[in-house]
Length: 384
Image (cartoon, rainbow, N blue to C red; front, side):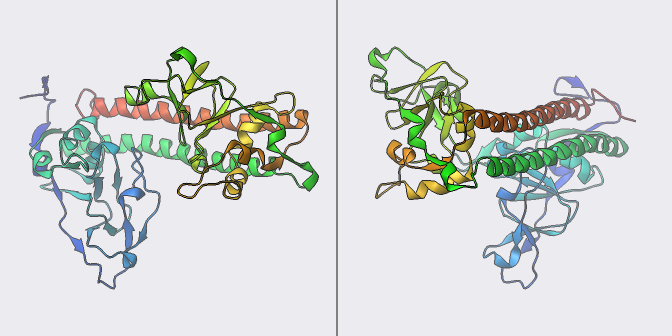
């Protein structure tokens, strides 16, 4: 028998999904006095197979799906987000989550958990119903054929992939610890203990309002809260800005920019990636006086909770609060000598490098796991 243009490995079978897996129909009534851990979609981390918390079922008002330890949870709403978890306890979950269980002794739940992570399953689940709120279509998924190895090989595959999961999770935990350590360092190093060490930011920065006269610069940028500066064309596969860009503001490498109405959620960044670009006229662009303030020190200063906490005192506007450049200039911060600023920035840069190295290691492990899954779940690589 052939499947996916490859000869089926010896001992393997091709089965429709519903022949070896089912969706549990067990429900939880919100009027129940039973209090269980409740998993919502936001509790399922993307692509990790882990959860980030739960709420109490007694606090919920809608009907939930029940699950048992060892069953597989898969987020059917926006399945491309790749949210899944092998339950570690009994509980309840959102009705937007499938509770999957193996049937007919053709599959183990541990193997099923790895199968729903595969590119093939995600592609099948993405053939969904609904456009604004796409959901995986059980009628389609249930009839789709998948290749299944014998049970002993399923167990071996699940065990091997579990070692990768453990390694990836250990690094994720270490990254979280390092990030907390960096946050503590920032609070400690960037907050002065004496009032005379605090100075108005306006003495160290100046606004830049150079316009894109003649539309000479074509790279249109935006400042996001999660990724900082992004090229609109790379982000959206097209430029979403106005065709007439002569009034757009020019920003150059080494300058800062922020969205005045979204700076409170982190839409502020230092341009490093590009030599220059243009931004919508609504943005505020400014640059530091490098003889007075270290550019990296200023970057870290503007990324602290100290900065975020001051914003409400300096914003203006009736409909949406905005932070003007004058408002930014009026803020006071701990700004020591240039030499001390440089030392502080170097300490924080070292912390950033450690975090980035761990993230790179995590990405390599994820790629290794992805390649291994492709080999193991197709029978190209066999385990005995």
